[in-house]
Each structure stands twice: as structure tokens, then as C-alpha cells.
Length: 90
Image 1 (tube, rainbow, N blue to C red):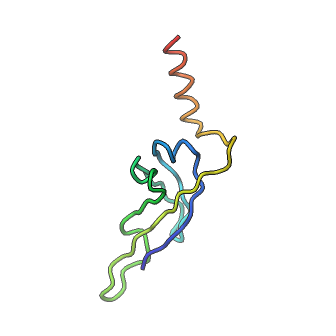
Image 2: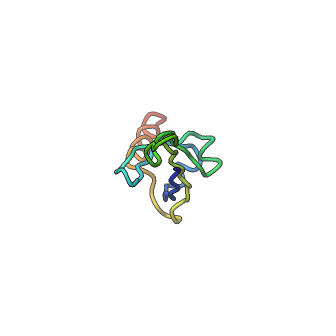
């Protein structure tokens, strides 16, 4: 009933959490990763696994979080936030 996938995420998401987009069998989903899930390297979303069938309930979607290689930039929103913070501090 459960679906397991691996998502390659920016290193910043693994440190602090954030929103990621993952491809699932049911289409693209936007998932919020909190700091605890990022620390564990595993997130789960209730009800996004296989559909309910008979006495079996809907499954869960489990997402293994793996960091993309070094040198990969964080998201555009995070880069904009860093620029804003640097300008604000100046």
C-alpha cells in the first residue's frame, strides 16, 4: 500500500527543511519537509500511497531525501532571500 521514492534535494533543504516537488505515480506533488524530517532524511505523506481497496486503507508516500552533489545552488527563492538579507544588513 505504501510507495517509496527517493528525491534529490538541495543541501539547504537537508539542513533546514523546505518545500520540494516530487514526481509520484499520481503526478507531481509539493511536499513540505520540516527540520526533523530533513535531519532523518525521510519524510512521509499520509494518503498519497496506493488508493484504498477493500479493507485496506490508503497507503503512505515515503520520501527518502538525498543531497544532490556539491556546488548545486539552492532554490531561486533562497538565493533571493540571501540577497535581501545581505542588503538589509548593509
